[in-house]
Length: 74
Image (spheres, rainbow, N blue to C red):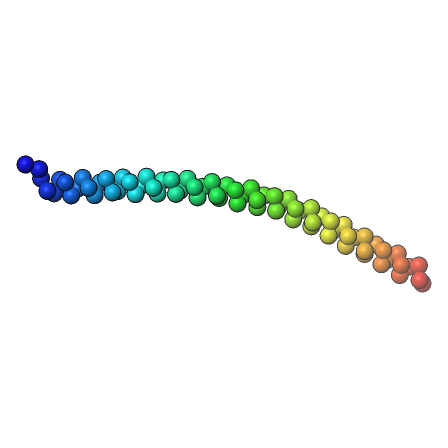
């Protein structure tokens, strides 16, 4: 004769194993998305660095131009 507690425990263990398997798949999917986001952020960081360098160069040029202009009007 089967033990009803053993049947209930086996059913619970099957549910746990199934849910853990689904959780593992979800975590793998999440890791893939995080890698994609990190790659996109890396690209944005490069663009940000380029823009910052351009802005700094522009500011230096404008400052030099202003000094040059103010000296020539004296």
